[in-house]
Length: 338
Ligand code: TYM
Image (cartoon, rainbow, N blue to C red; front, side, top):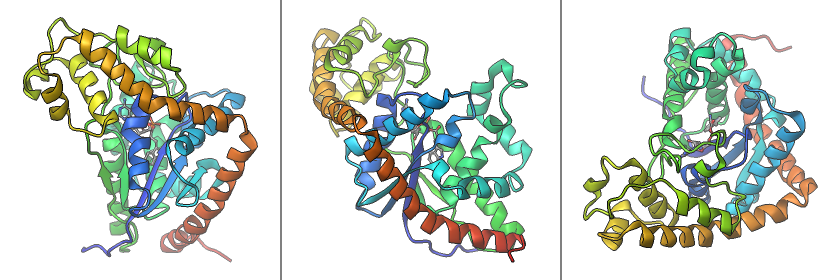
């Protein structure tokens, strides 16, 4: 079946399950800002995803505000983008139920992130953690979103979203949901842990030295880069020289992404340099780019009522798009409405 052309629309989200990291900033938020103004943009704080693992209720509300503050501080503008938290738009959960009935158990069993998170404890994790990708598909398809900017770790989930859309369209003979494109491009699609270049930088890693938090002050940022694991070799002459040096490659990619350049251009500038030269340059650049954002986040967090107001207004706009699409979905499925 050839697809209807859908109006270009961006949707993406971040889970408030911990503080924002440099990985979230470079892999997601900075790119969200870049897409603002290019097409319609909808950015969500996905609090219902966060509760797939236990969250302290008071902390959850605060973390939701902190992610929203990160969006605003980095340059997302509520007049140009719809900014809201997921639980204020119940249609996400309603469409997720329909998708639970479309997605196949075999598809869910292939999700590598579930396997990583559940580990050897798969019998004890929540049913929500297993069903999570169907909720993510609902987040995206509830807005007929065509483009989803994410880091590399979310690629499989966006591909599953396409599978769910295709199966729904096929099963109900309706050309209704778009086949969404994951937008994964640029040097920072997988920022790694500063102490182990084979692991992703994440909110939940055990040591704080592994990651840069968006709330870290200048001294902490500089210290973390200074102590970041590297190897004894200087910077290579070409990018190929980084192939077997994950920690070195990571620092080069962070530099490139922060400074809007390619990793190749960073290598051209620093070929032959030792870490004693590169690390302080990276720390200075990171402080220059991140400090204004963390200061603005702190300022915004002093007025939680204002953040709540922005999220509430965004949710109202989001409901305006989501509810008609949910109603049409119910009609297609044959759920009776009186
Ligand atoms: P989450 O909250 O784990 O991460 C949010 C975004 O940040 C990106 N990211 C990274 N990018 C590069 N390097 C890293 N180390 C790094 N860590 C995180 C993620 O790829 C993501 O883009 N399931 C999603 C949230 C979600 C969503 C959605 C995203 C729910 N519904 C609909 C897009 C569309 C998640 O857990 O992301």
